[in-house]
Image (tube, rainbow, N blue to C red; front, side, top):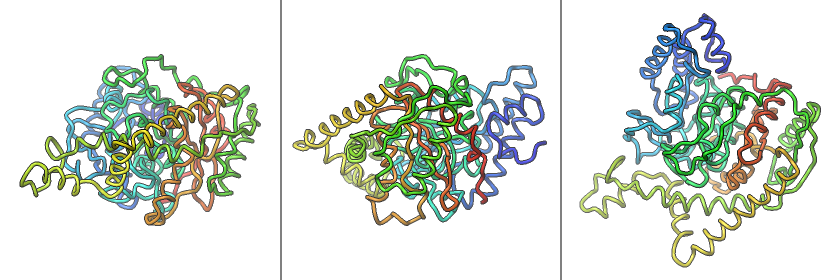
Amino acid sequence: MVDKLYQLTAHELHDLISKKEVSCRDVTESVLDRIRSVDDRVKCYVTVTDELALAQADNVDKQIAAGEPLLPLAGIPFALKDNMCTRGVLTTCSSKILHNFKPVYDATVVERIVNNGGVIIGKTNLDEFAMGSSTENSAFFTTRNPWDIDRVPGGSSGGSTAAVAADEAVIALGSDTGGSIRQPAAFCGVVGFKPTYGRVSRYGLIAFASSLDQIGPITKDVTDCALAMNLIAGKDFCDSTSLDVPVPDYTKSLIPDAKGIKIGVPTDFFGQGVEPEIVNSVMKAVEVLKDLGAEYKETSMKMVDYGLPTYYIIAPAEASSNLARYDGVRFGLRSDDSKDPITMFLKTREEGFGPEVKQRIMIGTYALSAGYYDAYYLKAQKVRTLIRQDFERLFEEFDVLVAPTSPTVAFKVGERAADPFQMKLADVLTIPANMAGIPAISIPCGYADGLPIGLQIIGKSLDEATILRVAYAFEQATDYHKRKPEI
C-alpha cells in the first residue's frame, strides 16, 4: 500500500483506487489515523464520524468489486463545516445553543457527496454561526493554524481549511458570507473557492446572512476544486435562490496557460493596510500569469472602501432575523430557568449565544428597527447595488480581477481579541465579492515569515470556469500548492 495516503489529492487517490492499488477503506483509515495523530494540536473537528466514514468507504469498495464504474470523488474523505445539516449527526454551528442538535435530513451538498460515493469524515469547527475571522469565536475551542499552532487559521471556516492544510481531510466544504472560505484558505495555504451566489444549493446550510452565504470547496489543488464544483453545483428545487442554469464540466477549463486572458489589478485592493510582502507576492503572481500569456492592467474600483461598512449592516440585519428561531422551544438548548415562556426565551438566548453573536444580533436588530431602517439597512442595500455595478463596469474590460486575499498573513491567537475593528479588517478584501454575489478563489502564491499568502482571483457572475483556468495556470507554473506544514 502507498504510504501517507492522507497527503495525496483527490485526483491522485482516484487514480490509485481505480487501479486497485489501494482501497477506499485504506484511504479513509489513513485520514482517520492522521486525525488521531495531529488533531489534538490543530483541533479541526467538533465531531469525527469514523464509523460512518468506514461504512461509506466499504460500500464504495463493494461497488468497485461488483464492477460498477468509479465516480470521480467516490471513496474520497470529505470534511464538512459544522453548519451543514447531517442526518443523525451533531450539527452545532460551534454554538452552545445547538450543542445537542441532530438534524433529521442532510443538506443538499451532503446528499450529493454521499450519492456520488464521497465519504463523510467529520464536522469541522467554526466561528459560532460563522460569525468571525479567526475561529476564536467557537463556543468549544480555537482551531490552530497548521503552519504555526500559535496562530489562527482564519475564519469562519477555520476548521475546514486547517483540516485540508493538515491533511486531516482530502476535501472540505465551507461557507463564505464575507470571505469565510477564502480568507482562511489564504492563512492556511490551500485552495478556497466561493462560487457565484446561487450556483450551489444552500438547503441545509444553517443560515447566517441569507443573501450572502454560499457553500464552496476547500481543496489541496485547483483540480480537486474543479472536481468538487462538478459535484456540488447545480439547481436544487429545495432552494429557491439556487440558479437554474447549466453547470459546465469545470475540469475542461483546467488549461496550463492564460493566453488571451485580460486581468485587471484594482489598486484599491492594495491599500487597506496590506503588508508589503503580500503586495510583492501578488504582483509576482501577476507577472507569472503575464508570462503564461495573459495581459494585465492596473485599474480602480471606486466602491471597494464601502464593502466593509455595508456588510456590517446587511449581514447582522439578516442574522438578527435568521437567529430569532433559536428560542429553546423546538430544538437545541433550553435554559433550566424556565418558570415562564418569556424568561425561558431570554435565558436560553443569553446562555446559548456567545458575545460575537449577541453583538451582531443587536446591531442587526437596531438597523432594522422603526426609524432606522431607511437610514441604515435600505441605504446599505443601495450601496450594495453600486458595488455590484462597479464590478460590472470592470468586467466589461477584464476577464478576471487579481488582488490579495487578506491584508496580512495569519495573526497570533488572541492578538486581535481586544480590537474588534482590526479583527473585522481581516475580511476587507474578500467582502466586496460577496456583496456583488460573484465568484472568487484564493490560491497560495507565496510566503512571508514562513506563513502562506493568498492570491485572490475574482470573476464574472457564473464564470467560475475562467477563474479556475487562471488559477490552474498559475498553480501549474509554481509549486506553492505542494508545500506542506510541519506539525
